[in-house]
Image 1: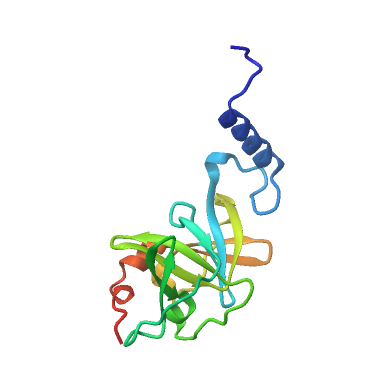
Image 2: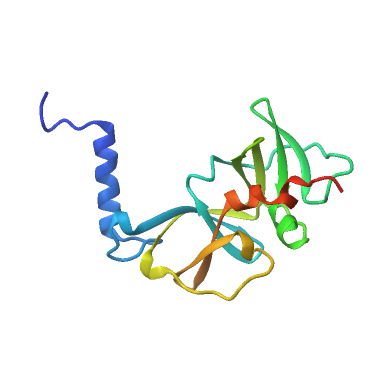
Length: 179
């Protein structure tokens, strides 16, 4: 085989190296691939959150939802996604008691939990974000979502809270959707 012929994986790995070397928007200047933490950035209200790439399986537009009688307000209902019933949670309502307003930028994060998949309605998905160790910042304790936050990062003027979806889906109140 000719040494100049590269596999698709080698080509993509090369693109990643070039991208990291460029240290474009959303990355720490000069950070190596090993020093970066990557996640999916999203907004809930005025909070900028980021969750691990391994915690978010898919990003969906808001689907048609069937309400569930007797459920808490944050359980919007169930949706059929490719033939599978998916409980849909208003993450803003669950965290703060204030219902989200649907807009063109609203998205659903499809995540897995022990009983199957669940959808989390967020106000906006802003894409992949990368943070270096030098971007870690301390932040005041937050009673509302602090139990689900495992760190904070600064990127420009925006403070990002690293949101643990795993901690969210393990929380007792998350599985108590009956009103």
